Amino acid sequence: MYTPHTEQEIKQMLNTVGKDSLDDLFESVPKEIYNTHEMNLPKSYSENELKKFFRKLASENKVFESNFLGGGCYNHYIPSAVSAITSDSRFFTAYTPYQAEASQGTLQAIYEYQTYMSRLTGMDVSNASLYDGATAICEASIISIAETKRKKVMISEALHPEYAETLASYIGSENIIKVPFNENGLTDYEVLKSKLTNEIACVILQNPNFLGSIENPNKIAEAVKQNKSLLVIAINEPYSLGVIKNPRDCGADIAVGDAQSFGCSMGFGGPSLGFLTVKRNLMRKISGRLAGKTVDKDGNEGFVLTLQAREQHIRREKASSNICSNEALCALSATVHLSLIGKSGFMQTAENNLEKAHYMAKKISELDGFTLKFKSSFFNEFVISCSKETPEEIVERMASKNIGGGIPLGRFYPNMKDCLLIAVTEMNTKEDIDNFVKELSEGVKK
Image (cartoon, rainbow, N blue to C red):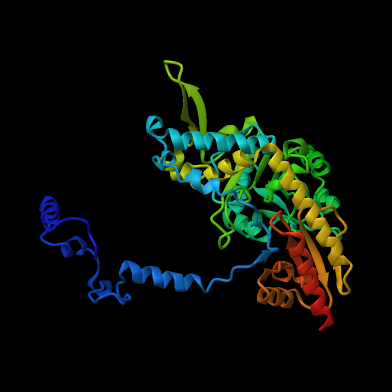
């Protein structure tokens, strides 16, 4: 056991609490479960040995030369300056910014992050981020339930399936009403409208949805408003806001999503950060924190923690939410990323994604054995049907060529076992796309 304390310090502390040894501190632990044997741990390493061990371990990772994976986690360009700026020690102030005078770096970063999220979504207020898109959707549901005093939540089956599972763990599957998607991969409006009752607190619509299709939120918003429910729009590829209307203009009361696309690498699916933005009337019901800008008595600009629910810390059973963390480093990365690329860079990236995805979809649809599953509009993600090979075989073969080949949808939708979800970003060159298409055609020939 490692302890930074000296023998004298340990003895002094034991005397203070009236104990003779460290073992006496654990006398309340039943003897039958107390471990008195040495732990089965590997031998210790020197620094050089440890570096060699981890280099060997890292060499076993599969790093794709080109990547077409999506489904909520996207391969976007991250300027090198992002890591340089986020490493600035002035941002490494106290994790929880209770003392504003000691946490100006953290508070300013949160404030700027909130500003970006509000401007992107068109909403009035943003919180200081959540764990990921899934928890953001859950928090939006909790807000809706508290606001409307209704218990049930309606979701589209075109919502990210893993987000739907997370939501069920929050509010119970019995409180979730599901609406199927139609032959174009869009939420079935007529079914949605028929299922709206005075029990529905909110309708959650992902746009673009998990299948890549761009929904028609305005039409759905009208029906939702007539039912006096709230509309939650989830955006998990926020670059799409460069080409489609923002949630506010689509009639949303709450806009949530995942901002991993901004300055956060794919990693192994994380870490990420969720964002939650609302109209002003819902401001006091949001979870997390709100940072604000003010001036001191001398007129100097400063940043403060404006609003948070104290119940999150001292009356947990009465809290609207028990998420207190704000994924500050990921939020900072997103903020720096957006400030570096600017408005024109944001728009160019969005257009680049759109053009490349449509180029790739056209090329694939010209191949024998492959068709586009849906005829609806899409941003940078689309579904193909495969009749010559299974999606799993395609993914495995692509991996052998150092290509991330997409996501087989059969694991989420039993009636889509022949379907593959493909995402294209600005990181995919024309050569990458053409090579992917070539590999698909080679598989058909075999």
